[in-house]
Image (tube, rainbow, N blue to C red):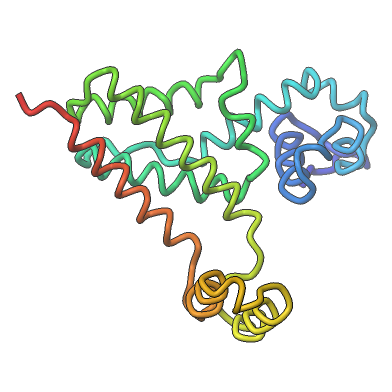
Length: 221
């Protein structure tokens, strides 16, 4: 929250970006306008232009923040473990900031944080001996998997835990006729809606399958 000095709100670029992140997390990126951002900060739109150069600059700063929250592949780990750490971190960050997925790779002027992150990922691949074509495939495929999974997970209803049995019964009795959709009912009631189920557990399962495939394609000679 911005500090007040002399009865007036004291702003900075960092505080404006903080508020923009909070607004996008709560209401989606569509709600982010300079006017709404000024209202959230209790100030006037024109005041924000003393700290940021407009909405595009705010979005670019938000992308940098997101990349800053994603853990770089640890240099001390073997390439596969390092990439796995980075991918798990990226998915967790993008579930928190689901609005960010479509912004991460669309900017024409990436900032130093995002560039450093990309360099760290490529360095981990290079450390593992992946040739350039495989490195390009691996990066594209992994990020597509991460982005898609994050969008799905962020939008899911209740999954497992308290109330699951009641919800499963309601779903099966209201939406699915067991005579017509026996496998859908069985998957929903006997697996998905059981206590302890986590859609997110499929992420690491799929991630390991992808990493297995990339590792198997690294030249051995």
